Length: 442
Ligand SMILES: *Cc1c(COP(=O)(O)O)cnc(C)c1O
Image (cartoon, rainbow, N blue to C red):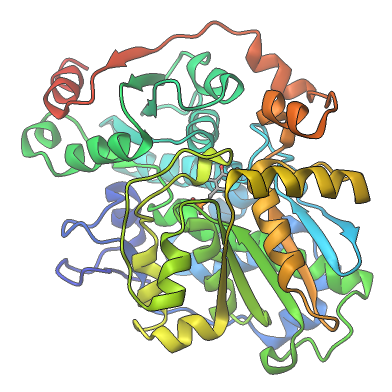
């Protein structure tokens, strides 16, 4: 499979090139040239398959000619080493719990897959070290750092906005050491992202070291996120929750709601749709950063500076993956709005949702999942069945969540372990020259 750039000014790339480059040379995002449909038989039997089996089937469809079969199987099985269960929260509403991985957030899936795929390619390339640059608004940093920890031949630099990620999140990427360096930038997430983007196109820097990205723009990060949409469907089917002729999109009553920031996660879900997953509609739930919501309403995409909110991993003012979604539907506004609905909630609404849900169902939402739960609940119809993606464990935001729902939530053991480590970080002004100078000494 070849990959093209959304800006259409770059040559086609192999998977290997697309994964190592991250961003295309024309600054566009890579997209597979075409999307193969999964066979009907796969859907007929899907409820009997495990997450790993489903993941492998989809990975083969996506990456078949590009990776040896046995190697692909190892990558998939190793990356998906934890469960992604659905939990019934109330009538017709299920939570897809994506927080059972090592850093308790959905980004573990893509980060673990990418680390293993990149290692596979670096080994093929021989000796030269690869440097991964990542901008994070919180959860990306921890998932990528832990996904790559100890992977030979790869060094990871995590850029994060000083004082704008929770202590718990920070501890997950500043306490690791080894091949992981945390860089604390005096700015907001968009500044971190801008520094990384500039580094990728700086000639001197690229002559000095081999750079790549592990943000959700990388095809190896976002494509594997399609696996769990199929697994959610398989679980609902197994429960008998989808009482429809569920093989056809036209008669599907399956609704999928995704709390969205940079839009990599929902984009992977939309790839699932293109591969044949029978979803009736998707909902993109935003916090107060309502750029996509406004696009759906007006047809005009207008980036804005990001606003800080309770759901801070979604504080994105210019979602990168919009370009992919736009391209996936040929830039056709009607096609996009026919399949995707939007919602936007401010911090007060997020709080109110967390309190109400806890009170009525006993289910504890994190602020990101709360946006999605509310968007689903407000729009679901009698005959529909919906999942919302619970993208992080509420304990990752313990101080805030405890205060909001007036409860002392448990901290899972694997999270408590990070909090005992020592913080190590490089302080960096929001200035590209300073960042470049630092990297030139590495
Ligand atoms: C990253 C993140 C999101 C947003 O995902 P995108 O793929 O950027 O849209 C939502 N929730 C949590 C907890 C996250 O870490």
